[in-house]
Length: 270
Image 1 (spheres, rainbow, N blue to C red):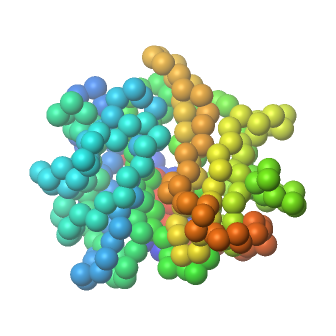
Image 2: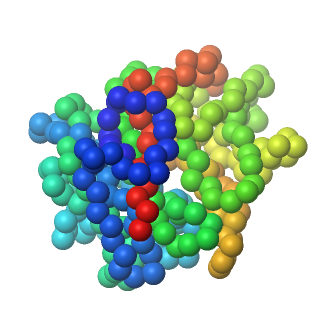
Image 3: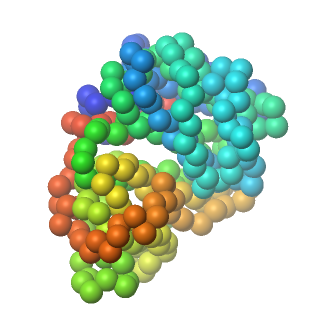
């Protein structure tokens, strides 16, 4: 997938010819695709990397041969980087010096942008990795991109609601592979099973001009260790910055679909 703003969310089994893809089968992990950015022209690009791959292991992140992660990135960990990048570079994830997967940079956005790259498990049967790539539009309101990287049969739906300390009690559904704009405030993101039972919950402090990801993680592994459903929220903003602003969900009805950005996974069979 690319950090582009062109297409509705979709899942593709085979890559398009206009994407530079390569397979990497070293180590016990396998990558199913390299990924692509959109051409840059000297703009400021903030790169946020999240590890949604359920494992006790942690990844080191490289741009080419240069390691950009000061410490290995653990499961459910996210970091923001500002590495110099150009077309042709590769973002590589290494585990114990062995490549677990790589993401090819073909282009970069033609504006200042927040880019998100998420590594996660491809399926519950193997240790293969896959990627989600994402670019945020420049909006005044806080934005929340909602992604589902959980692998397994368990189903759940997400909603965003006023924090338990709020005077009001409102909620809105959060759909996977969508983006919502919200007003500043303190919220809770809740995952519920089909019977309405809460299975995970995380606080989200929303600030104007900030871009957030909410990721459902976990795996019901057919081989090896399983990890329960959890929610990953990044970044974690300081509620003190709100300076007493009241929490509100008035903005959550303004859903910003992929006409502003795309949430695309491209997979390549090994």
